Length: 159
Image (tube, rainbow, N blue to C red; front, side, top):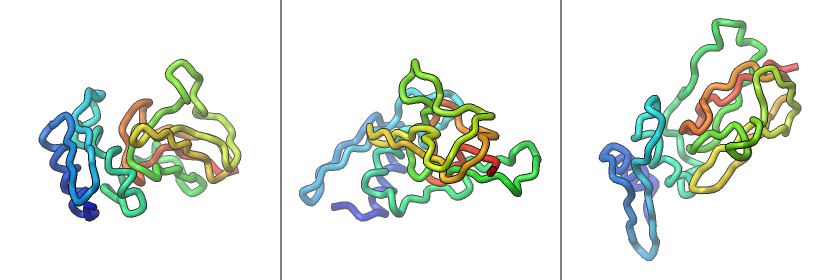
């Protein structure tokens, strides 16, 4: 199969060239990387589409960008804020479907284990749960925005 470094390089190449998709057969395995898809203007194509394709093979070791989505919370005291970060690369969704209400909104009180959002990776919907009890202070990404490993999703003021 492919080495981790080879997968990362293939994903980078597909993302930077704007190729729609690449399918490769190698050593008895098959890999498909979906590339450029229409994405909101604020999200660069290189980050948006190819990343979810690599998640299944590389999730435990993936760390493409340190400190991603780390803007400060309006200068407020961050001492008692807990940040929920994305455990995977994928697409952030605030609700289970487009017509549904968001799982949480700013001001909502949540307990540990409460579902906050979904991060889709390779057509798999991964529910992201709160690991602390508290109040939602900020939601960082917009709905349907690509997110990276370690990127801040929510700020929760611990209770």
